[in-house]
Amino acid sequence: MPEADVDRIYEYDPQYLADILKSVKTIAMVGASADKTKFSYGVLRQLSEIGYDILPVNPNPRVTEIRGLKVYRSLEEIDKPVDMVDVFRPSAELYGMAEKAIAIGAKVLWAQIGVYDDRAAKLAEDAGLKVVMNRCPKIELFRPFWKPRLDLKI
Image (cartoon, rainbow, N blue to C red; front, side, top):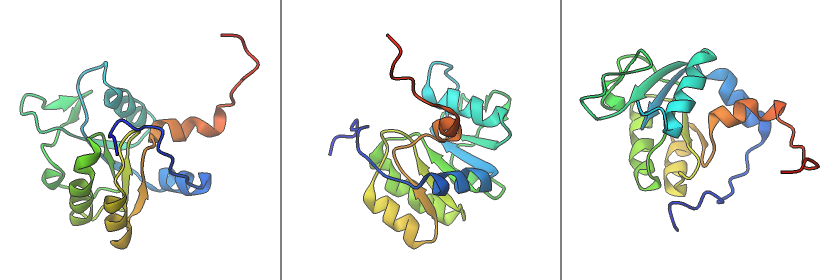
């Protein structure tokens, strides 16, 4: 299964997604980047600005903060409870991220667009975590307000 298969469909009830996004406060963002051109930077910025407590996770020792937020080298380094682990890493790393999310007591494992692993999802769900794969929380937060206008010319 190719990693870049962003068309892989995982159906989630909109209320399931809304409940997750309403219930979480602290989000560890694995793969957070200080590069303003990266998708993870934009998601970090938006989620932080609307009130989530974002804990960027990036193993690069030269990256000590992103948008004024302290950067952690790993999930294990985080010194406070984490509600959700948001993963911006390749699908091949998701199973290991699921193991770590379970170990730190997270309640949700969220895999970004293009990131999924059914084994990782089962592991996390069996441990009691809610799981979302191949989705972006930033997009899901605004989806109820976005209505496509298919009649407009491009």
